Length: 169
Image (tube, rainbow, N blue to C red):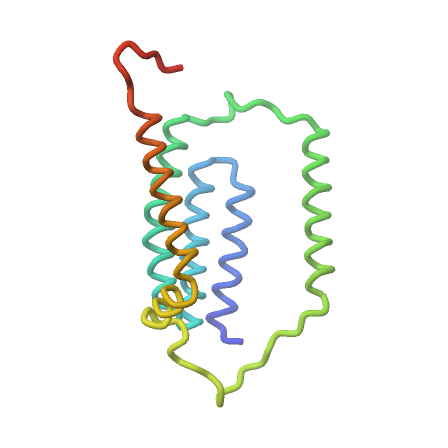
């Protein structure tokens, strides 16, 4: 394993913990942005430059701006947040522990595949290969997803459209 991979993994794990453990929601979003950047670094190490660029542009850019807008719009602070009972905290700890136990049990016999330089394909993460697979093997799911997104856009426009004399709740 390369030192860059280990460094990116360490930073990704620490920033993911920062997302969960941060008291301030804005700090949590900033930790999430750092997590997305480290994951893009992993994509670059895997020779998937397109996925790295899309991850930065879409998630660390657009989605995080939306998250920050919603957090600032809601004006969340500690005084307005309801206090969680001890039973809820205990149940969350039990659920998290059981999830960790299930993950460890599922992954304990996994052996990672080794690197074989003879069969290594350096073009595996390139855009032209991704496009060929997407439009050749997954053309129908790709088109169904576009129809689903179109229906969601039409539905949101219809819900947002106000008629004269109509009250919104």
